[in-house]
Image (cartoon, rainbow, N blue to C red):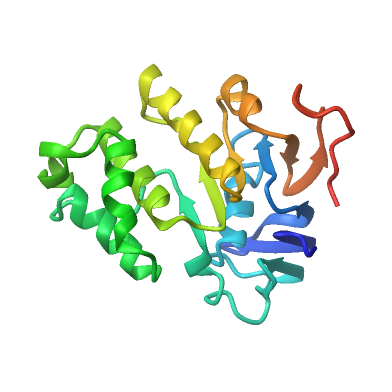
Length: 226
């Protein structure tokens, strides 16, 4: 079976600076991979390259069988990216934001109600404009859009940010459910204790490179970089 993510000697430039400087990464279907490292190491860039949002200047990059060096747009409907800000529209309600995300990805609208309920956003909150929400509620809205899209690959950048303990527990449950239903997850997080419990492999990103780190408790074999 082809890997879901395959990066080989990938160089990616941000403002002329090599945010990735020859990164290698292989992720198989059903894995949950945690990228750890300091700010500016390149974690977010790895996720954005996989999402087709940052071009590959050099190297090879395939996601879900799509060659990103030739067509970065083709993969976008099949992946779901949770960034720091969350791509939400303040003038739309919670339900309208989730509905827009699902329709833009060509997803099934029948999944929207369940996603809102799963994230505690049904009832009155579903009809509340996002601009009136707290930071935690906004984060839940962005997560509900991911759940409703039922994407093959989840790319999560600091998924626990802006949430209280209950919200973080909810994120953990949602990620585990996604993995259990066959999705693949790649996440970057500074909340190492929580994120490591979700991951089957932990990799370290430093200086735009990806190196193996220690395996998680749920996996005994050595971590694989490529």
